[in-house]
Length: 282
Image 1 (cartoon, one colour):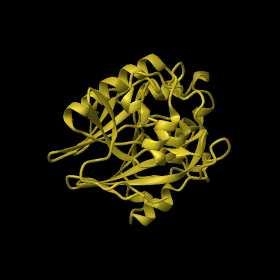
Image 2 (cartoon, helix red, strand yellow):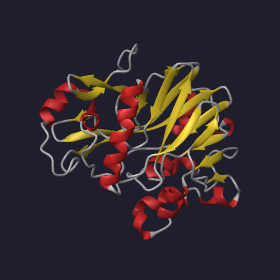
Image 3 (tube, rainbow, N blue to C red):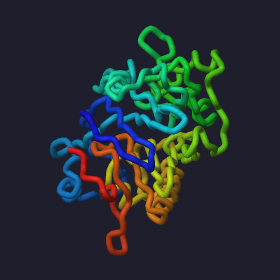
């Protein structure tokens, strides 16, 4: 599926979609009773049938003044059962007029396989051979242990980068290229990061896996079954979405069928809304 790019000032943000798979709604928000029928009426694009949601897998290409940068790498060769999603980032880059060799910076929001699997080609070599890969050290350590489980495959795909000296493990929040900052947003994984892109008066938060379903924009304090530390994940999600709401940031969400949107006020509450000035993706 192709999604229209978004403009943040002069920076074009291009979603690179590996496709999607239906995942069961059961257990998504543990301990809460959700009116999924009402959610489906409000956000039909987020669902697949009556009992599943549409789990899309996106990376994002940023056309910055310092050259093209990539947020995550998609699922790559790790796109196999139970994922049911194929790695298409390289194909999508070609459609955007960019070669993997053009990429100089790859920012990993975290090291789950659907975000980091595309770092390696099927032959075991680096997919983005001229790029520095930016990873929070807490994730690099976490996914080296049994606690990381099968998702450690994402880290394994990047071992050669460490050997080649092209892995940046600085822990602090910092700027990668002009206008592109990483911020530590732990909970989903210990080293989970989000990316803040600012150009002129516009700011876009690339959330990583802070969000999986639109209902989390309305209830960020609810725990997610996807988070390694659900309590910390809820705290982080609440703090970041409050900041996005207060500062009128746009959002780009890795797993939404319509990746671009924002958090808007609805009376005394809040909810997921369309990005101002942008018609919804088809």
